[in-house]
Image (cartoon, rainbow, N blue to C red):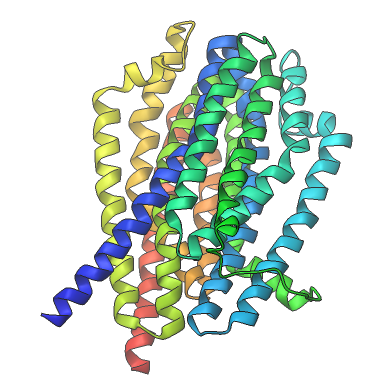
Length: 444
């Protein structure tokens, strides 16, 4: 009876944290989806191509904020579970300093290097000015992202996942509203899309500040001297999140270049539809991983091995159920889904996107396993295993496969590279988990 009660309590906590985190992450992914929809509607295929070329920049910046936020918050949760509050507060303060450092770097790039950057990412001809204007505005507003995502991670780990979810949803809704206003009534084009996406985190930060105003926060700024060891510790615990996002950006660049050589700008636009839809599903898996992270970190800090692996099992089961539902819906309605982002009803674009939906989306059955496994190891202060999984699924397997399959199968091969890479990585993830579980049993 006591065991069942404890298990129900664990499942209740899992459901609360994960459901709120998923809702928040879906809201966050709407930043990109709203841009994709309104840019496609207002600027057509050229705007969609420019947006897709600029997408790796978003991945890199968002990955950096996740590295700092998730890494710092994980350290905070572990130290707090051990009642080491001074160390926990140092983790917060150090994270804030690191975030400010990186924000300055991104703003500097936005002021001086956007022209070179958009060309390096593959923009050419009429696409260059569209990409350049989007990148510059987005980079100049990057400090808002750093503050918002850092606070989001710490508030979630400070027993307030509901507020983190509300902040993310509010930011998403405001982004959609601003997208419409800036692109259509104000006719600001790509600048408007970037402005909407970059200013939405400001509202999220205002909402998160109520955690302090109501004095619900257990973390505070303390006097610290940022040491290399502390910097590396925070970055190591969050590095898998950075690798995941940066790898997404690198893969998008490589896929864009391969697709340009096979199907031209129409192919890149089709890939833009596929990858932006995929980002929404991936955000759900990330929501599961981020939602369960505080619970896993607490179990690790208190030495509760039983609940540690139960939480992992809950997370993986939920990810597989979601993958099945999403793929079933996509396979039944591929054309209507593709047409949502094809305002000009380009038949070639629709055909390529439908083909991509059938093949590329098969990766979802394995993506959730890999994202959750990487987060599980990070939450257990095992950054090496998390980093290995992130590197394998990120670029180490998928890029060589993309070149190999593209040479022999063309566009079909490019679509196929992702599900094959995720499947191979999932095998590695489960092997690493079995080894880790065996280590725990032998130590018991």
